[in-house]
Length: 399
Image 1: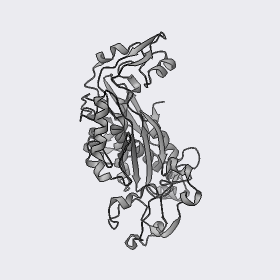
Image 2: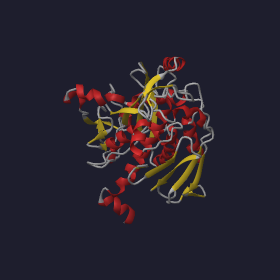
Image 3: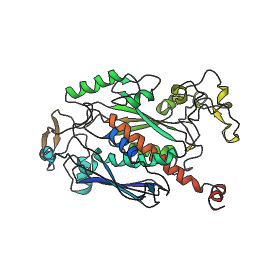
Image 4: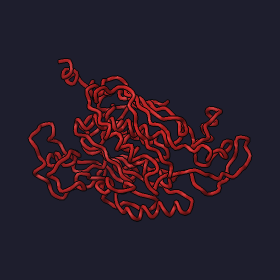
């Protein structure tokens, strides 16, 4: 399947070495002002050829809106768009026509379809993720109307960690979207690149401002949809929500997030200038505030609930709790490396794979931009699905 989402769906098409890649975003409400500059700025974060830490393939990644937008506003009809491929070097892949690259999707595609596009992996190439970034940017425009935002950053590269307190302000200006320990991360990437190898990475994504109650109770849970979305990104091997795997080592008394009216607003993730900096607002992995911030408490009865910690990562029973949703996504090392590797060809013969071409030494770097996009798409989809959750919501519309 090439379609993602339930109410807000994104269908993508195209291959790495085709004329273009593109998408159709369906279910997007009418009347939303579409900021093309913002969409392009998000694509610019992911596009190749921008630095020595990414593939040298140079693509402009200019998005062209084909439908669904008129006079700058969404029309409610499918938003169609394309991104033209401009810098293919298909000849670099000619020696791969009959062999299967280790760690790639080549063999699986060949066994499933009996045919495969050997030029950069065809449909399995991460080139397709540019479409997801564009679709996610449009979703963020909708989320922004309700004060919701999504940020990601690189939490680790190989054994190099960002430290205990991820710095999203640093990630916003970092060349590799580092959440901390940036120079050591860069050195690790360049070391792998110089050795004709690659290195894995992990990415933290935080969804802020999402109201409580997003997500379907059983078969389309918010955290399950997030996990599926992240696992659908090329090279992702594991996803954690909140404490993630650490929760399996804890007791209930440690993992449960106690509730207290004192902490109303504190853990919500809403933009709140009364808190002393973004590090406190993040409240990652169950961090607690030592003192109650009295200035955070408001009179709105809908905002009188609060949590002392956020071990759950912003979800309860598959629905958002109103806290920040905290996701950690683990990327494997780029399988495209410039070392000789044993493999087989389509006839089952043992051969040696020697790659040419241009490849990322660490896919987690640009992958962090894709993780942001997927979290945006899930959140917007869940928000639209929630409109029919109860009679009161429907009466607000049909009154």
